[in-house]
Image 1 (cartoon, helix red, strand yellow):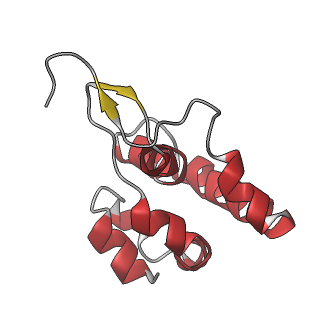
Image 2 (cartoon, rainbow, N blue to C red):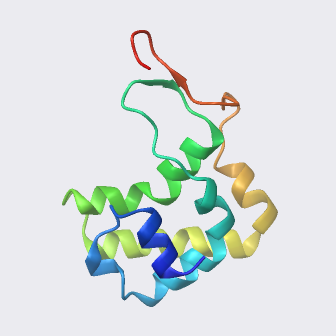
Image 3 (cartoon, rainbow, N blue to C red):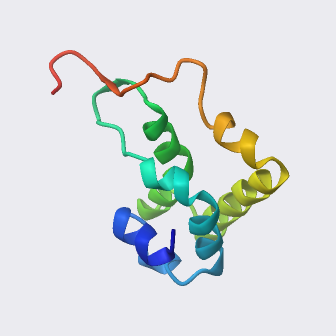
Length: 112
């Protein structure tokens, strides 16, 4: 995945991050996971793998979008993910998913 594909798929990634070289590495390394990542519904009762990938991989940038983290902090988090991935690529994706991951996102009562 390229940066252009990443920011097109996730427009919530702040523009200030689009030119960061680490974002290109991030998109390339996690392209397969990001390709299936999906923002969970506000009324989600149980998350799917796609939801967990979104929350872990896009979540830090979304927190930055809301002004709740500094640019330096989010770039550090992205680098930590890349470092973890480099140590154990196969284990990295599995490590993003808790044991109670649902096959499909489960929404709470009254949600469609």
